[in-house]
View 1: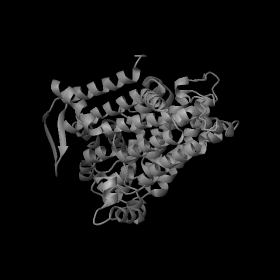
View 2: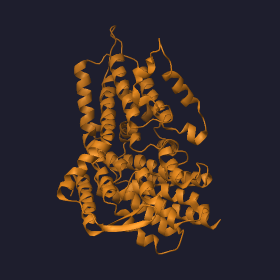
View 3: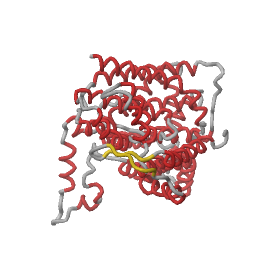
View 4: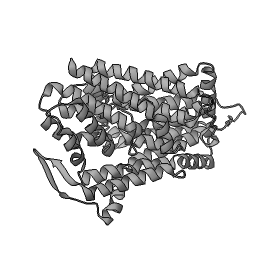
Length: 471
């Protein structure tokens, strides 16, 4: 299992899901709970589901490969190496401050923007910094995946996390917000504590994987002077800024309509009755105002920025192709695993067995129960790792069992927290598999190093749930 460990774990998970469809009958909720006959995954289905996965979720792979291409070109400018060296020098002797700051920023980004795999845009930079500091790849994965998991669990205004569950349960973003902030703060503290405990171990070896570190490159102007770094830094910052602004739910969470109004005004500009900007931007941008962007918009921004970067630094066509090739090679396995992971979701959507699994658990008690609901939502999140699909599969049944609407804010809090916990260790976690594949860290090695933090965060969440329930 040592070679291609993560791929093997994923394939076993997919095959196990296929097997469950042969063992368990399907259960679905359509105004009432209905249990039907077994609807097994046939031989042709086994090969058709991955094809459907590529069709529906192929944009994930394109985004990841676009990130790889950007860093391939970014590396050719020499700016990548320069930025890493400056940050490492800035935090020399202040590594604990660095990790605390980084974990806090990443977790807050997720809590506000709902970034999951999209945050992989920052992974190569963070990896290069931590490895150059002298720490190993497991520390990188713990910092990165752990921060995203905390951001999910303590999500505050993320449309794709809190917003998804809140819309179904008719709760609001501000319900139990201080408890969510509490989970966010305490979760950050727990993760930083675990990272510090790890980096202080004397048996942790340095892991200077040259493939994951930037090269020292000097790009010179026509006059022979070294090209300055600031244009590359500005482009990088602009990508990140646009991703953040594009993901924050200004309208739904903060009732800020300015971006919607501005967007429609721009699209409405005409020259002799010709909607010039509407045609230039394309039909897909009709409703894609800032605050309503997704993977496709992020991918487009990254590709355009890569082209601008190559022009500013006068990167030759051959070097551009080499950069694209190197970047795609580094992220190739990540892109493949991240897309194929959704095969489990496709399977359970076409063969709804998740309710069959969790129904007996939720039937142990009448109405709302913190323990049974939490475990049920955790199991559901493993099979339906995306919040939208978890909500669609589970919440109609959950609201039929739990009719007391006063506990719905807590139900929503439990849902998003269990989603974050599943993201941390599940073999179906798109973020986790993408990160450890990039870092070449085995899944089993990851579990050995993260299980303590997982249990700590799980217990912290349970304590908060019980306190809320008692109030």
